[in-house]
Length: 313
Image (cartoon, rainbow, N blue to C red; front, side):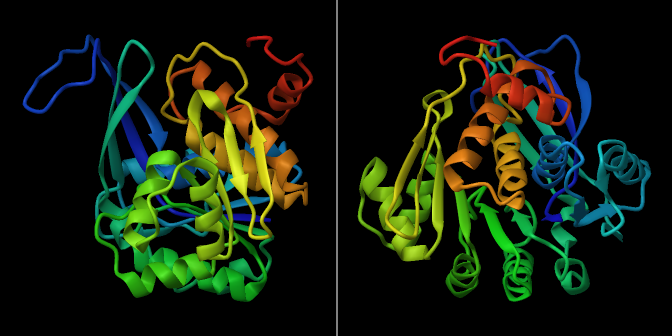
């Protein structure tokens, strides 16, 4: 079983000619409403990538409001068990997303109930978990507690350190990293984490290896159109190319990558193979609007993996 502990949001998405600069208003003809939150996105991505072979459960918090009820229903409709979600006395989280003509995005999140997510009751659920997936849209202390509970239960802890906390408590972050088995970041997040940990200013593979040694975890760095690479705790370096696509919306690419990675790891696939599946899932997720709606199925991922290298989707 995969357990995802994290955020559940409703996304309000507007297509704009360009991302607004500070102080600038940019008009969009309309907006779309989608279900989101990095936690929910990754849970649905994992369920789709697993194709029903693995149970996926979502833990976190929503509000006692119509958006929270809709979020629960949406998870269930997409093959994710929403029963571990708790209801808090706060609005369900909302994300405001601007997407430009090149498919790039800017996101502002109103956390709402996500800020009240707690890991206190996760023990019984994690006792049956193979993989625990975490992100940083809920409180750091709760994420660290979930990671420690998961590690003690024998689950493989996958941490997507996004967004990187602005001013985290050092002891809490150290505890979180110590309980992590697979750390997933993009290049900017890797640089930010290195700076906070006081690690040398290094580039590429050397930085990744330094992080892996410091954290005692396999470090996976997503590279957008350049694919992804990993530095393992054992000193091995892995690299996978990006699957070629013409992006429509990159909003859910990272979450699709993490969800597919978790599904592959839960099936006990080698890290290199898991990375290849995740890279394809992340690319395919750029082909439609909406992080969850665009998340690819297992069949789509496997079909893409069978295509000759360089053949676009």
